[in-house]
Image (cartoon, rainbow, N blue to C red; front, side, top):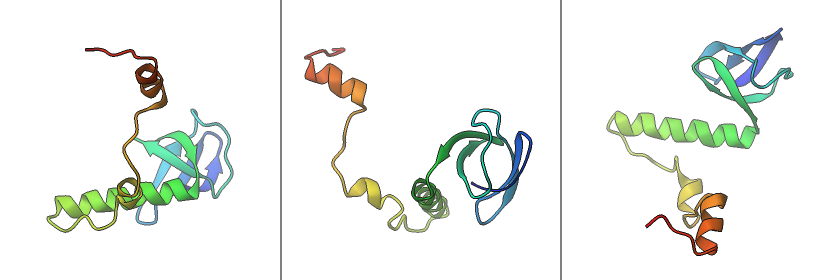
Length: 100
């Protein structure tokens, strides 16, 4: 969601289709225009506009899929690259460690 206005630890935010008051306690003071990853009315992380657009596209794709429509290119950023492990798992694999 994008911050529209700030009042202390609360911000009026919008995702383009709906508005919500968001608690900023976990991310601190942010100016209007900032993009936030939110969950249940709480800002979890400050993100870039590009990240926000990717997240919104993915959510739109999932909504379309649940409605019986096509997924489209909602996950094009993932389809365009090879799968990769998180850094800590890749380091363990490179070191010859396994859980099996």
